[in-house]
Image (cartoon, rainbow, N blue to C red; front, top):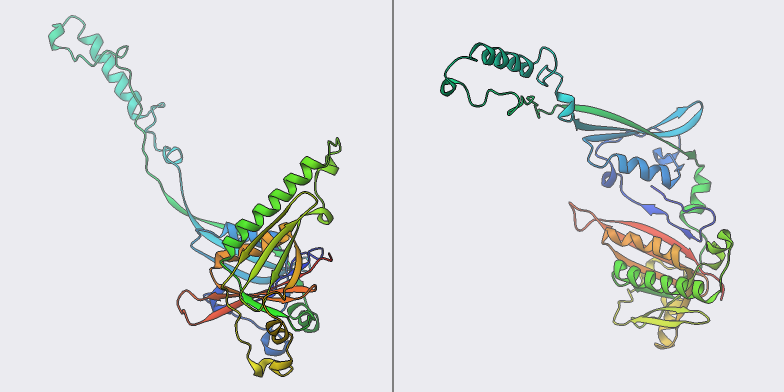
Amino acid sequence: MTRSASPSSPTRGPNSLSVDLIFDNYHIQSAEPNNTINLELPLGPLQRALKSAVGSSYANLRLTKRDGIPMLSMTIHTMTKDSAQDARGFGFGGGPGGFAGAAGGRHHHRNQADANADPTDQDPFADPDLFPQESLELTMKREREKIITQDIPVRVLHPDTVETIMQPKVREPDVHIQLPPLLQLKAISDRFTKLALTASSSGGGITTSSAASRPSASNHPKLTLSANMHGSLRLRLATETLDITSVWHGLDNPELDPSQLAMPLAEHPSTRFREAGPDRWATVRVDGRDWSRVLSVGRLEGRVIACFADEHALILYVYVPHVDDVAAEDVVTYYVSSYSA
């Protein structure tokens, strides 16, 4: 399963998730190698479809066509309950022929017949003016199945195209470090971004143009992320009026597997950064709002390894543990391009 951000976004996120993590049962038939079908789909319709499936009994997802256009069609089965008002169609509501109407007529007839009787023998609750009749309402609810269909337009991709999406050309990273909890990092990053927006709006004078008041992608606040090979991570916001920094120490720099490298470990850029000492930082600049969306993956509660290619890109590897198998992990990968200084 792959996920790609919008073309204008500097962030790309290929995800490698096992099929069993998503589907209970599945069937794939394709002429491509390894029985694979590669699809590109918009996140908005997919998210709406998934939200519709929350609380459902079960949902089916199938690849089909509508007027020759490939679609992912999600059929959602859910159980709903009729309201009490819908269950009142049984003649109990006091209308013509209902039990309450008949009871009212009976009381009225008895009151006329017993007008000359001893008042002590009459029913004290029989006067309809003092005690009007109330209709009997049932609160019975009936369950029924509701079926919802959500169609998601998709584009079928050639395997060669998928290869460039899954593995963008990025040079060997200079620093790799395990990040602190992402939700903690997100809270601080969002605070920095909000401060930058507030400072920008208060220091830029008054404008009457509504279009000018909406920040474009080019003037979104930029955050500077830096890390070294000695367990430190630095987040900085620097503007004309602000310069604030938050630093984490004691983080882990995982060891590389020499068998996975295209060069000897001694010649790897991270080795040179380690030997240069704690003052040698690898730095990238990211869009504050885009970075916040990336950090939302922290809800998956997996460990995250960040690889810094100095002044070039940031690659995040999010390892997602399986609920039923703690030892098994899937990986979600994000590529974030660095803005120039």
